[in-house]
Length: 403
Image 1 (cartoon, helix red, strand yellow):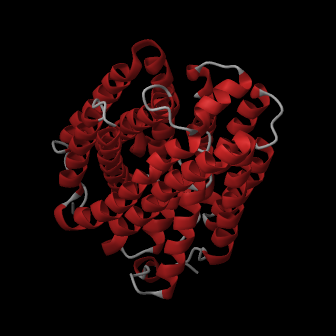
Image 2: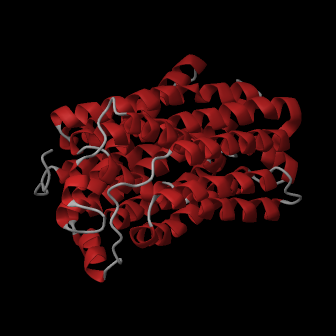
């Protein structure tokens, strides 16, 4: 029986349940981003293998993110009625199974179709994770726990690209995707074994009133906009990075290009750190600062020296994950305060996130094809600037939360 007392008795750092929850969601987040963006480090190889253009090769990323974004609109509300934990477990497991099929795709069209289905399968985790954390951890550690989960997605983004790039050097793109599938299976097992069952979940039938609350609140709308523009800029930069570094004068192979993604470690650290800072200084302070950091990083990548390019990518990555790590938790907390469904709000935030990744991120290949790196920087700079303006708008929206 779910009681008000149970809802308040959330896990605290140091509790065995908190440790299990943290490890499980870290592994699930790692798997999600590793599989979702598994083809990003392989775009030049896929373009050559299937005789498609740079902008067409980016469809292998966009199809997955678009499928995920659409499925989020169903997975979030469904979890309000059916529960959180089983849906998260099955989501990671199904996506890992599809990852195996991707490695054996015979044609470009088949690979794109499988990537779209994989994105749909992955939706069960990100749609629910933030709502699950809000219910299961103590309210004083919401931002910190959200930061740890996002840190897992950052490590996943790095690990996926490192594994894919390294294996592509050895056995081509098929070996790379097979390696990602193995990583996904291992993480799926960890998630299934360690993720604690919900203690404070209370089934609620999704209502039109709850949906109305999360689509009319100006603070939530601004946060959806931050998600779409920030991730669109971030993905556009990384989609084009492989082509830039594999071309003259750098001439890096997929393995060395994959090593560039070790800067994702900065994103992992930044996300967890930003969560702690948000608990202390407030989300309205931390998120705009993160946007300024992303702009500084993008500007730095205009340099021609490889170390400065990598430095710029690292700065941008740290800023992006600081923004996303805090904003994602902010959505769930604000939705709860407004009386709307937290999973519905999280789903809409992530729908905007992955729609931005699919549309704006896909334009990174087009910008590279027609305007080279300055075009990519211009696109990303405008999008990050819009995100910054939206975060400043949030300062003028009445707060419903402590911070």
